[in-house]
Amino acid sequence: MAKPQTRQDLILSTYRHHDRLVAQVDALTAAQQATPFAFKGRDRNLRDVFVQLAAWEHLYLDWSTANLAGTAKRLLPKPYTWHTTGQLSRKIQAAHAETSLSDARQDFESAYDTLMDQFDALSNEQLFLRGFYPWTGSLALGEYATLVSASHFAWASKVVARFHRQLEEEQAVGTH
Image (cartoon, rainbow, N blue to C red; front, side, top):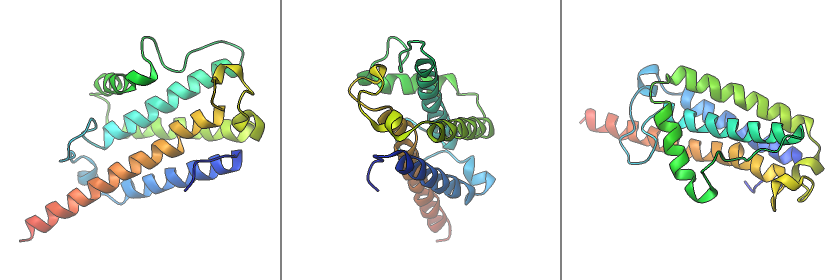
């Protein structure tokens, strides 16, 4: 699916990617959901994935809500830049090492609901007309919104699909 170019595309794409991700996770048993990933990567389990999704949703919401209300705020906390987002993501993961999967998922869902409310409340121009808000720089607000919603959910869905393959391979090895 192409990146959203309109408010309606953003809402539909975010909804579809969210529901795909949720269905993938809900297809797993509670024991499987608690199983660590066997593959390499920053995220070691489903909790880490939901922590990342929720944290980035909150970064976007804090930034956009403040700026929409007239209070200037950076999207990324200092000293982070777009070149150091990997460091920020690792810091987020470390800060949530004790968060439960249930709490991480609940935080993700709550932020998702707030995102969808914001997308619904804003016009197509507010979301996708570049330059509509000077604080979004060279991108439209909807492009940032896409990064933390539909695109990020698609990434998470790929991670969960890889995890499903891991579990299938482990089961196949265990039956032989």
